[in-house]
Length: 403
Ligand SMILES: Nc1ncnc2c1ncn2[C@@H]1O[C@H](COP(=O)(O)OP(=O)(O)O)[C@@H](O)[C@H]1O
Ligand SMILES: CC(=O)OP(=O)(O)O
Ligand SMILES: [Mg+2]
Image (cartoon, rainbow, N blue to C red; front, side, top):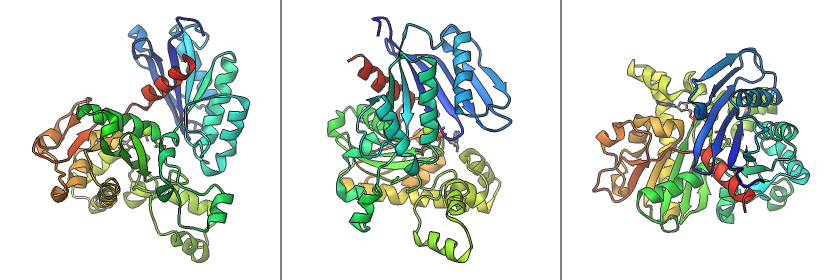
């Protein structure tokens, strides 16, 4: 790595999308940001904003067959702005890798062996890890000499005690098949719990925080003194909260019932629970903005979907309050958590006895900054803390390659 190589390209490959950012770690500035979505469809879309040049957002639509083609298209966009992957200023490429199993507890330099491990975890992250592997291979082909760093969603949760990480099933079966609770969105839970402590003027080692990461995928975590002690996602990102298209918690017997009595195959049930459940299954929409719009028009189905979403969220706040014993703050983050004031209000409503309350005016404020939304008199802070998974991945990747 040359002395002036301070840039990191971050790739967040999802099942049908790639989000990316090019950051300069000398000052934390963003040089380019973008997104490829609907990969594999005829209507793929690439949106690229070259912040370094002050250029306008460029959008292209048309079929992008797979993640390899997507990444090559991103590389071409960056090159068009003089920010190409051949730049000597590039220090590393940081990859979000969703499942790191029990092995990966830290950001990791990607070797053939590490990549083989990530591939071996595909059975427990079938929607996410294949895209991560393709992203890594394509980036390696484009810049074989450059360090590639994997930053795992699961890493932050590896501090969970066995009492929280184990399911109550036969131990030999669980151990033979890697069955335990891993948790996801860890980069976000780590970043947001730290930023929440800062907002309270506390050192992270002194703060107990409940983080509610509410995006399309959604998860809650209980963080004691900067370490995760419980989280709502489990073996896969299906467990826990109600999500955009995933059911979250349900009686496992629902699966046997569907297999035995509804004639559904395991793959069909998998698809039902991961893609056709949650908000979209309940009311046909997975976007909270659209659900709120329908509620404002008196739509009862949208109202019920909202109520189920909030009821589950409230149960997790209560559960993690009990796990932590003492709570300094509840922090809302990600697309829904940062933007949907009615979700925050409803999730905290009625919890005054726990010291939790939301100030309506503060909750209604629109701001991109971390802020308190509880009244000054509240015993427990309620906060909106924007997440920044890309900055956190870049910071961790850069720390590794520059050490
Ligand atoms: N202004 C808003 N009001 C309510 N919900 C919003 C708003 N903006 C975004 N969202 C919600 O955020 C979700 C996406 O969150 P995000 O964190 O970007 O998800 P992901 O990273 O999992 O794709 C959308 O599905 C939408 O429901
Ligand atoms: C792990 C997970 O659920 O990720 P996402 O929210 O990006 O789908
Ligand atoms: Mg996200």
